[in-house]
Amino acid sequence: ILNTQQDEIAADGESRPKMAFGPNGWAVVTYTQPLPKPYTGFVRMLRSTDGGQTFSAPFTVHQDRQEITHRFESILFDAQGNLHTLWIDKRDMPPKGVGQKYIGAAVYGNVSKDGGATFGPDYKLADHSCECCRIAMSNTPDGKVAAVWRHVFGEQTRDHGFAVLPGASSAASSAQGQTKSPVRSTFDDWQINACPHHGPGLAANTSQTGFHMVWFGIRKQDGQDVPGVRYARLNANGEPFLSSVKSLPDARAEHADVLTHKQRVMVVWRSSDGNTSTLKTWISDNEGQSFSVKILGLTQGPNDRSEE
Image 1 (cartoon, one colour):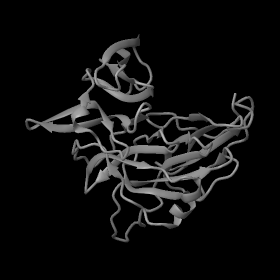
Image 2 (cartoon, rainbow, N blue to C red):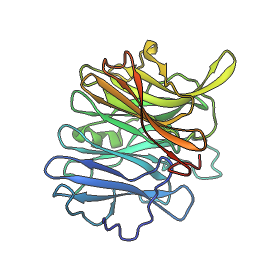
Image 3 (cartoon, helix red, strand yellow):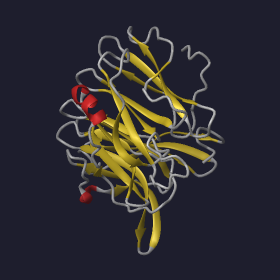
Image 4 (tube, rainbow, N blue to C red):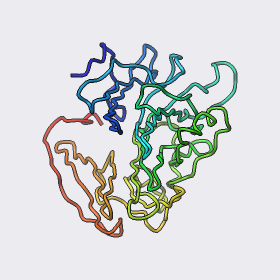
């Protein structure tokens, strides 16, 4: 049992505790600690140096300690053993009454070279992210870390942005530098002034450059709004091969994720008809050229996410 020192822990929707393993026996667990004001929180971490046998007391990851949004964190070690943490952050919101407009939130991050013992400065990866969708992270074939998240393009077009994270040596300079615009990875052109609470999944194409991605969106087709979870291959820059875009073979698919191993691609999702919830997988052995569906399990009645 982990000693979280009686922290309240966010464990609903797309905000869940995470765990990651690195070199030197390092293991870290993160979660969002809700604060008294609505939609605020701190990203908290416990670290282990013995492979998860014992853990430290919890501590806050980011330098900013305002009672604002620091939520929906994601963590991943890169090939050099650096720990990357990203989260949704609202420190750039102008004060009420100022009259300035800031759309959405922002994606912030930091890097630890020693498995969470110390952290570099907070840096901003992107302005104008969606407020409550999970961030997907993946190792890249060249040893770095890439991320994709729901992003606000223009006024209210909520598609997805992609970026390769700065390394440990450049993250500090990124904290003082100019924020770059992310690469646009989806083109549903979904116009919505709200957060769908439905983040993407990302996995490296391990046999060649590029990535595999899954996401939920609503796009126009013959004048109608067509919702669905979709899959696509991305190039090394995060740009989609539009000919690879496929809809999952399930109109009720939700909260999908993707994993790769050599040429195998596995997409997993939840599907519910209101009474039965089914866990399904879409498996490809040819890097996403073709897929077959399998049912992993099902359950009746209330279960995780049944409120949706």
